[in-house]
Length: 289
Ligand code: ZN
Image 1 (cartoon, rainbow, N blue to C red):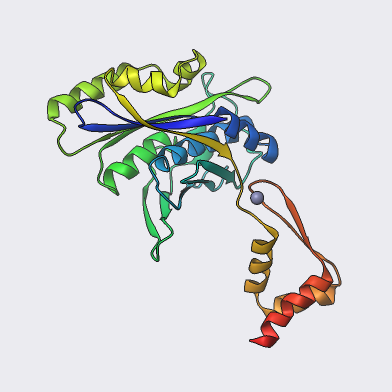
Image 2: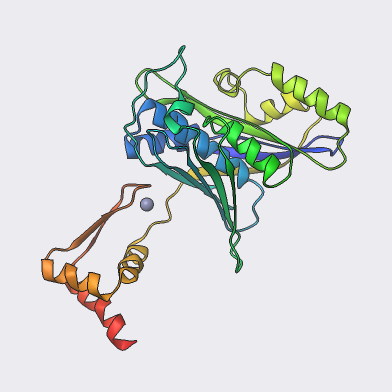
C-alpha cells in the first residue's frame, strides 16, 4: 500500500504533495494486463490524480487525457479516502522504448486535451480542460494547473517498469506557488527542480515521499499523510442503473434475445451478470412510472 503526503515549507509560500503508489499501479497492471508503455502512462495518471485528490475533504477527482495517440483515452480517478482506480482504452498498446525510456508521449499523443472533473458531492460538478503540451502527462498536468486553475505548479510523475513488465516504482510530486512567494523564491525553486534527479530514480533509491519533499524544501512540515489503495466503485446496482438508463426498448431487446446480460467493469475487470428474471423486474420499474 502506498501513501500521499501534503506539506508546507516554513515560508508558507508554497505547498507541496508527494505520492508513492507502486502497489496501486502494479495491481491495475495485473488486472488489465497493461503493456509496459500503458503501465507507464496509466501509472503516471494514477500518481497525478493521487496528488490532485490529496487535499480533498470529500468527493472525487477524475483525470481524463486523450491526445489521439494509440493508447486512446487515459482515465484516472481518486477520492478523499485515498481510493484510486484508472483505465486506458487500449491496454495492449506496444511501442518500443526510445533511448531506454518508455515513450509515454508517443502512446498518449499530443493532439487533444487533459481534463479534470471535480465532484465534491455538491450540486455542481467542476470541469475544466487545457490542450496537451507533450502527452507526457506531468507536463500536461502542470500546464493545466497553471493555466486553468491559475496556480503556478510544477509536477513530476514517474513509473519504472521492469523487463518482465512489473512495476518497480511509481509516484510523483506536485509543488504549487502560493500568492506570497517572491520571484527570487520561484527562481530558486525552478533551479532546484531542474537539478533534481528524476522521481523514478529517487524512489528506486529508496527515498520516501517525505524524503523527496525534503530534497525540495529542507524545512518542510508534513501536515497530512493519507494511505492510497486500488479500489473500484463498480457494483451490480450501478450496472442495473445503467441498464435502466438504456431505456425500456433496449431491455425488452435483451429479453427477446433470451440471453442474460454480461457486463465487465473496465477498471477492475469484475464481471456482472443480470439474468432474464432480473431484467423482467427492472422492466417493472418502467410500468410503475
Ligand atoms: Zn470495477
